[in-house]
Length: 275
Ligand code: BEZ
View 1 (tube, rainbow, N blue to C red):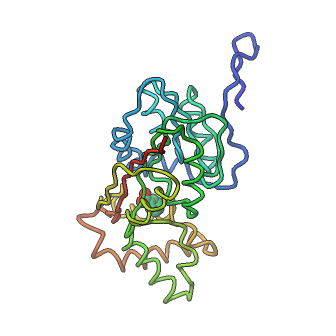
View 2 (view 1 turned 60 degrees about the vertical axis):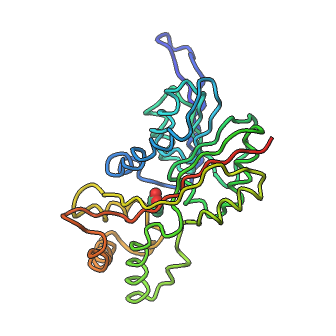
View 3 (view 1 turned 135 degrees about the horizontal axis):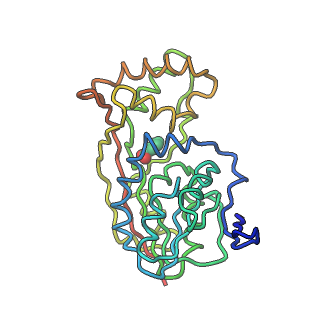
């Protein structure tokens, strides 16, 4: 809870903003400055959501809150949640008018029911998809909608191939055991939603090659921000050496005209909770 004071030092407002309980550390500044494409691309998902004035909407995996804010512009009553305390702390500072909370997407429960649950570029971090779908279903009103984009089958497969070849061949590491991501096919994910009583009204699996900022360093920033689970025992210097080997291996596929382009493959989905 945030306490805000007026000019006479009296409590003027109690604002919901919980971020002390997280164990997950993300670099929220790097996320905002070098990886801002995450929320730029997400604006298309907000269009798919079509938020309406007065609707109650949960932004699940909101990061530093840019899309939560986009949704709020419609007049919807929106709340952002994320597993990372760093991200939520930054979101609270950027958008003090919006409530944000640290929450685990696999286990959260809500007292209030929502008209919509929205999520961009977050669900692929939640490997227990069944528990996530169960939590979303419980959070929605009958007739409420779930609108999401996340990595689909084949997402960043060239990057994963590079990581796998370097770590397994040169360091004897079992990379599959460390992979933190869930990238389902449309069939698999739609079936899961149907099992939990949703009607899938839209599903699209598409390629979206994504240019990374900072030229030659672009893939380093991406690996530093997103792929740390693969390299827990390595120092910063050792990681730079490993990144160099990965880059040598995959640059014929992903490095063009001085720019790294990640081989993103997205799923967009809209599902309605049956009444
Ligand atoms: C993605 O948005 O597809 C993604 C981001 C970080 C790691 C893996 C995938």
